[in-house]
Image (cartoon, rainbow, N blue to C red; front, side, top):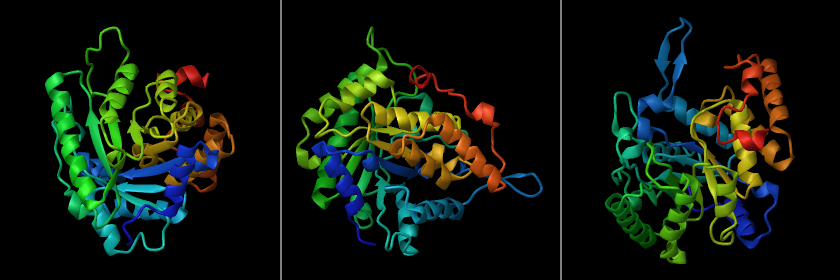
Length: 335
């Protein structure tokens, strides 16, 4: 496997930065790095013929990645270091124009395996993957941070990010930056969380040289106003992408990608929303139709259910339920 940013992704990023963006340039990443936070629990469970729940395996998880890569619908496949090695050993990326990416840090706020209580506490910077090893397999990595409006916590987080950037620069590893909302409420006074996060991001990156800046952001959708504000601030240098978050309904998924694009976001990096779908490939195919062809989110949900019926796949929710927008942040723009 050539550890490069493939031309397909590089050209999309170039057109976005230059202002020549078209809907076909919207970037979709399949985030299959959940084992870095949740272990076996994150890979999912299946029901056997006897009706018993059984944990899926690493092989099941990797098979879903290969299926998505073969579809050609995603631009980036994000994995853990271990999975990247396994896929590379089986030449899964050979001949593919999908860019591999590796999660390069696992701060404690993503530690969510069974019985764990780490997410109840602010994140402590931590890295398992070694950048120089990851660079042998990929030219692109993910680094994640969380701001808490706490001087000592945030300073420690940014010091760790600075040390990472130095190492990544030395080995020629590019990265994109994931910015989480805190898992618990923080005090931002009279300022809404979206504004706080936007300012924290811009302030953080203002001191970063171009050679070390992230290619794009991955962050929580904090509403239309917050997305538009950040995406329009410096579009030639700061490309904004959205993370998927909780699985939600199928309408939630389509609304999130539609609203992200409408208000200036140019990347969607979805994990549970894709992996938890009854048919991941068809879900992403319809995500592309929503962005590229203007298919309404309502019609996309109906088309998805029609497809499940034709394929003999039982839908997890009835059509009426799946047409609902359940995420409060999406509702104002969905009505």
